[in-house]
Length: 166
Image (cartoon, rainbow, N blue to C red; front, side, top):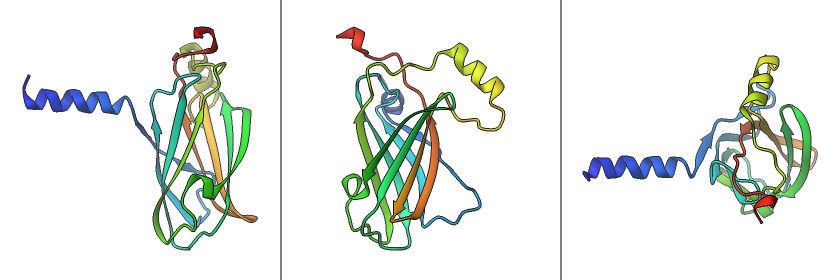
């Protein structure tokens, strides 16, 4: 096998393990203090009942000493889950001026439904204004009552392991 073929094989293998996801700001007109360049989801595709890490490449012009992350998850547009985390549990505090990484890890529930093709087509047909995928995550970073950033992105959950597999 040539080095080029080996390099391509390694790239294809790695690209299925981690997925870089584009983010959209909740309000395009808002000048957020924290800018998010993108989200890496690892491993990808996400498997039911398995751990996953969402890593947000971010930047700030101000020191952030404390805060919280408010996460809301929707499935085909319906709100299904909310949780709140201390920002300092997800990154090093205080956050210095410049680039920083927020990494949130958790195990996906075993009963998490995958995105079936027929439901995705139905959803895309009727959802003309918000082209997010079957699962969407909205994350707000707050310092007190001040909203430092608000982003949203979509993701899929595959047919990986489930409670029935145990």
